[in-house]
Length: 235
Image (cartoon, rainbow, N blue to C red; front, side, top):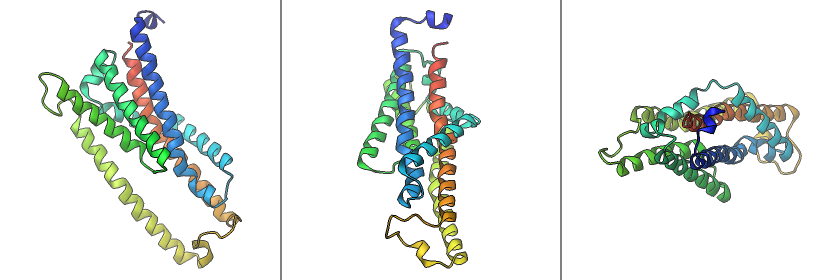
């Protein structure tokens, strides 16, 4: 409590705004990316939309609660050094506001247009953009100085490989399923509102919960890392 008593009025307002934006990003990230997890069960009428969203939200929360925190620390390592050191300063808050507002705006824009864009790509791009802009505005720094390029390279590699691995894995699983399950009607678009067979519905619900859990354990930590950083700024 003594820490909060030592805060000036202006610093307290900036702190609340920063925390509000971090929580707002997580909120937008949730309803933006949850559609990816529930699309299959809703389209196939395996679950009603309300039940699908509630189930996805519960498993997203479970994923956050059991996560190790590795992704959160990875996000902090990707942030500009000056932001990590001076997060409680005016410049630090400006960088936090810049990266969060831009990420939220892009997520809302792609959600409004119905584009399945990645919140992870958005946040990481915002972090790197803030770092590059800060190096341009800071005297005595060369362009790009202060950005953890080694960590950025690791993240870029993961972002590049993820869709490739997903594409190959999905293609192989589909080929395997077609060779093992000789029922052509299962691979065609449904003509009525009738749900698929029970065992397929169970598989679809299982994959929905799995994707939701994985999303929570990964994407949920990104907001955790930013909130941790903001709270460190008041110490």
